[in-house]
Length: 312
Image (cartoon, rainbow, N blue to C red; front, side):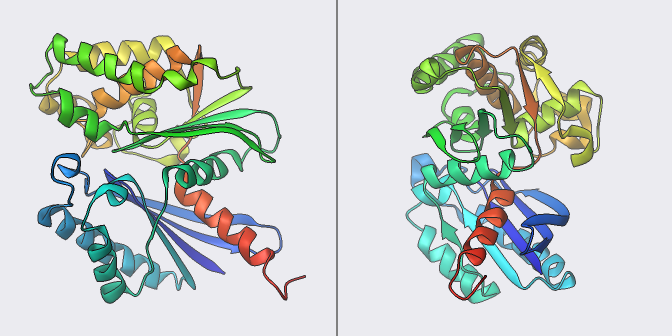
């Protein structure tokens, strides 16, 4: 059975096409595609997704629809996250998606996003040791701690690369004072994680760590296979943050290529968030993964059909 999972995030929209087996619950084949729609632009200030960003979202979904039809997907599982949790016109847009594509978009809570992200990132690991998953999004950041059997801690922080950039960075590049204020905001927001025990492994998903992994290895064209399981040390993250602090958005894009396209203006904010989380959790390194929410949605769907009445 072929399944499509769509993660409508605050900054990007991601598509997963997976050939799955309901007997083994393994993803046998997958392809990933992402586009930057940044639906969260101005949402915290205006409490609405603006028309230009909505139009870009629909253009992306139209593109994805073609891929989904080409792959004869039997099931389409779209979820929306922080921007849709905040925007007062979210339901209106979801109704339009239903009308145009016949897809039922679910707006998931921060807790649910954290659970599914953990499931997607941790499931490929065969051991059942304690892990932490960090998901730095456009409008929120999720941190989850536990193993495949139980989640001991999860939190969705109102802290994202787009929201942090819009709130603090008024200059290009930002002033030192703006950066200091952003750091203070991050540290106050993530204070609850200071008492977390040290996990065996820490997995970082989403655009910030995957992009930093590309920058570390001089990869200019993004490829999942080249970033999965890449290790970023605390000193490497700090070094990249120091460089980004002095660069304009245009310089970031020119220096690092297509891998930063659509992120060049928010990558510094994401790097700051990742660095401060690593400091708070006393981490020397993290493992980068391209997997996350959209994978968790597929795994969760497979669990649901395996437990449905009539299945053996």
